[in-house]
Length: 145
Image (cartoon, rainbow, N blue to C red):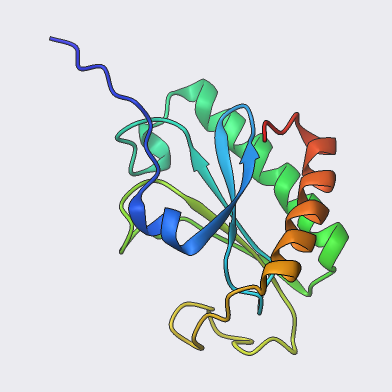
């Protein structure tokens, strides 16, 4: 028996992020923490916890989208390093963090998780950051918003 599953974004991701749009495979989310340029890709596939669970075509597409996102973030924010990670210890749904790191950021050189409390964007700053990222990311892939 085949179970039809529909993609639903994990509640914690909904609560902690701002929606930027959808690329061919992934939902593109801005982490609501103004301290870091931090975007998350979530493949829109139900029940997926790990990259290896994606079919081969989706694995390749995830790599393309991750690379395009990394190029865009580093072009806009020019960090010393781009941290990319798919931890999933607290949120089991597959999601891939892309965080531009600067030597002056509050968690440098350690990981961002658990170092400093999140500082949510003020409304105007969130709107500006979303507009900036949507413009840049639409150049890489059509971004459905």
